[in-house]
Image (cartoon, rainbow, N blue to C red; front, side):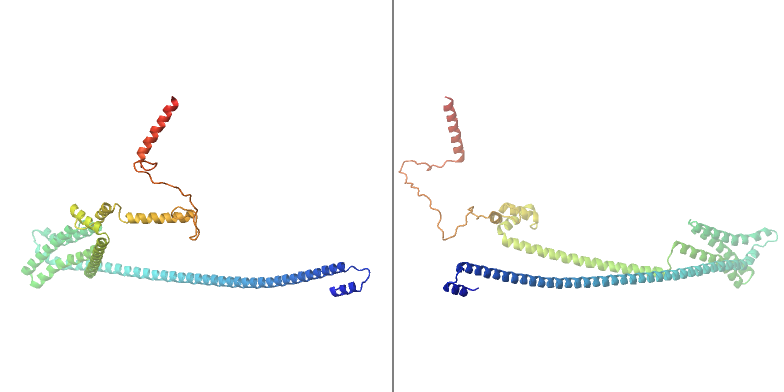
Length: 416
């Protein structure tokens, strides 16, 4: 029922109805319907918002799931790549180790073959030396025996055997001494001496009893046999002692010359670098001295005098510190101005921390606001010749002494 219908009923004087009550009921119904519509709209809005929120959450969750899946896929791919790389590296290491082992085995076989070849050649050389020694002895002995032949002293025919055999025995002694790493030069000297004695006998008797060819051939045989065997032993000793060949000595000397040249170049480079560094340091020192002279003329003049007085040719750091302390009363890096500036900055920082102004006031007053009015105090001028309170200023010591005197007088008056 609307307000118009209610008014018509009132004008028609419908019996049994209260117009005011009907209007209130209608208003209550209208208000209830409006609240219901508002609640419905709010519920629909909330439901729509929840739906939108759910859809957004679902979209975000899908994005998060997609990202997680992509990340998992990437991690799986990276893990597989690492595993593949590790497998390739392992295979490469195994292949390199196998190749190194094969190369080492081949090198070992080559070294063994070379050592066997060297040993075989050494043994063959020794056998040839022994056989040559025997052949030379066979060639040389007949002439020596003929030289010592005497029908009345046949035992002298053993002398050639003593010479040739003595050389052989002494050479064996030299080999034993070399194997025991004892001096062996005197053994070899005796063997050569015996060989030359035998050669001299063959040459003398061959020229007298035979022809020059026989004399020279048998003399050469007496020297060549022990000489070739001693050459074999000498080479063996040099090899054992690590003696270098002529080619090796040349290469070592060449390497030493190259190393000496490289050392000379390095020393020259270091000397040039040191000279450049010294020059740069001297220039920097001169520039520093010029700046000090320009910025601190009084301190520089005093430093020059102080250096001259102390026997120094330049203004050292110790002299500069002392001159700075003498003139400005502070070490380098500080002065009265610096200390004042530092104190002012510290005061500003402390005031900012305590939220107060630098002059100590804690109130922030605008410029257009007038300050608090102070009571006016009338201080008439003093008459000439008459003292007033406060016109005489006493020192702190005088004020302290006056206070002590007054206190003692008061204590004395109380005791009376």
